[in-house]
Length: 561
Image 1: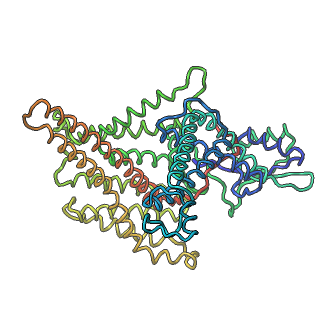
Image 2: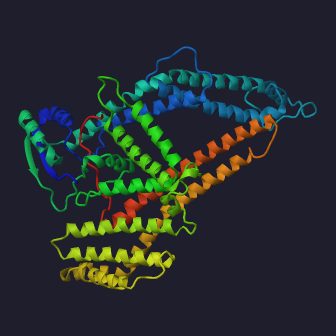
């Protein structure tokens, strides 16, 4: 569900402003709009964080690029790292200029330009004994080359010192939470307005946190005014799904999406269908087993030591999600008997394997269309139930009927069903009538009448929405075929009888092709999940459910964990 919010106005004495902000941060329950901060203290805190990030990047890059770090460890602060990096950039610019000059004058050899100038000024013609440039170099070529070597040595020395000091990166990184907290605190100071001896701020608090806020107000002698949101206000969205589906909030955060405050929480269907989409798009049980093994390793790796507390909530959520998604993929692999693009002989006669392996692909397309219509009809029926006390619910139920009709049309077009059933004409006709008659109320014809004119296009769009779910089959099949082709390429190296050394080389080549091929396929599977599984939930399903994902996620003023 989406937790109900209350608008809060908090008053305190101006002299206690800093103490008030620290108490609010400790409570961690009030969402404030801090996006407009632009003052000098805020800018300085933000610059400190950005400089720390830049220093870590510089040290990490040096450790990666430098083959011979300095022998003696040098402790470096953020300011020292940035100063040395700026000096290194100046040296690099000087080195580039020296290289340019050397390239220009190298064809003329190593001569003394000062002596040449004296002879030319004396009127001596040197063209018979040497070829000189139109403009003499500033110094001898050998001097320029030596200076370039010295400059490059200085650059290398700075890079080597960075590589040695890379261990300092973890110390700097450990300060990131404090630096982030300082940025938020300075932004909150700007949000705290003053009116004489009194300071005040406005924000949002979940109704579940109101008792704790009231208790804090009593302890700190704050003035507190709470009210429900006005129609023109946009409170932040705090999603609190059922416990079993709570990890999906981490997925929303990772995608940077949140439903609007007045919209529905679709966490449960999102996670259920996303798991199914994940399994079908990856399409291979062995890949799912790899994901699952890595996830189990992650559970073990992040297990806190005894007495060290718990895993961070975000880490637990992502591990739980990947456990579900990986398990679903393994199950799909077992149902389709697909393991690294091949299958087990003993499973080829299983009912699910035979059904999914239909050479005409009709069964797979039927499955995809069925998943699609169930997904979209769920959205419309859900809307209808939520509007059950309004005649508008009939339009939503009508849309469910339209989707069912389009599902039958789709299967008839591609030849899965031999003919369009006669009873479906009645379903389609009644459904369209309900949609046309109850989408717009008579009193809304002036403002929303255009929606009725768009109904034919929207109905055809519903057909396209159902057809779009065939991507689950197409992408999954492509993944399997790519795996099969790499398997065929790899096995081609070891076919036939050869000398032992040829067989050894062929075996290495086979392993390399399999590793590269399946690794590439795994990467493409990950990309397809980001594109297709996310789209089907956030576009097709959400359009029918009426979720715009235009909300602002609840982000209370609190310390970084």
